Image 1 (cartoon, rainbow, N blue to C red):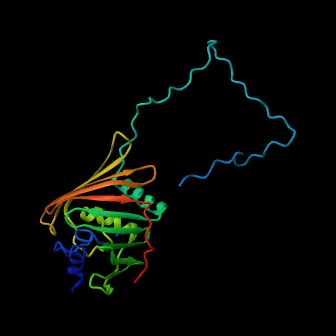
Image 2 (cartoon, one colour; image 1 turned 120 degrees about the horizontal axis):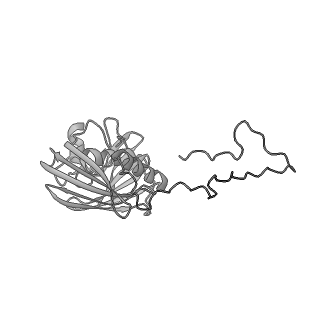
Image 3 (cartoon, helix red, strand yellow; image 1 turned 180 degrees about the vertical axis):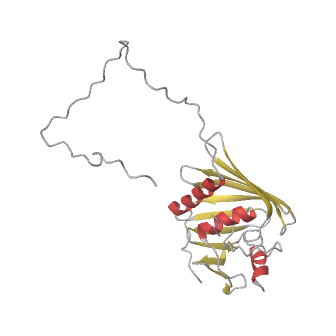
Amino acid sequence: MTVASFRPTVCRRRAGLVLVALGLLVAGCGGRPASPPASPTTPPGSSPTPAGTATPSLTAAPSPTGRPPSATASPTSNTQPPAPTVEAFWAAARRGLDEAGRLRITVIGPSPGVLRYEPEASATVADGRVVFVCVGGRAWDGQGGSFVAVPGTWECGAAALVDGFRNSGQPVDAWSHDLPTDQSIVEQVSLESDGRWRWEYRARSLVFGGTVTTTVWLAPADGRILDARRSDPTGETRYGISYSEAFPPIVAP
């Protein structure tokens, strides 16, 4: 099996496709892509006040009008924050996975499966068995019972998660830019009334032979994905998201 035909078939062997993430296993392949230091208590170049020396108090000069100076008006409370960007959305998603250390995505739809993510590794589980692993830029396919190295350089973990969504409208277990991407991709991010960020994706998939639409909701405070849904010519898919469910560490077979 050639590399080009491998991924679409791996990802969706039951659905007759190549990307695990695109189908049966939802496998694929990864990445497209602080707080400032605290201000010192003593200004640079000045000396701290010697012990025992009183600090002179500062008294505001009286107003010529006899009235206290007016304070600068504060912004109105209903001011909305600026709309988030696509890059900011996926940077937050990477941060959420990095901080949580793991992410489990359950695919609920025509091609069910489970994806496991760590910041630098990822895997696909089908029927309770790990069938694809991506670690350290290398990938192994275990659908045949024994694992076989997949040629090429692969992006794993958070990189695979982000590039899978942004290039094919779905999460994948590994990513390579040699894989087919959707056409006429349109991405946009908006701010929900409850503070969540919503990423919307629309494209034409040659693999699926039609239009793909995907929506992902994320909490900007911690970067965690809250929910995700997808529609393509094979039907409707939902993604169950969990950052708390433990699974064995992802390692090379």
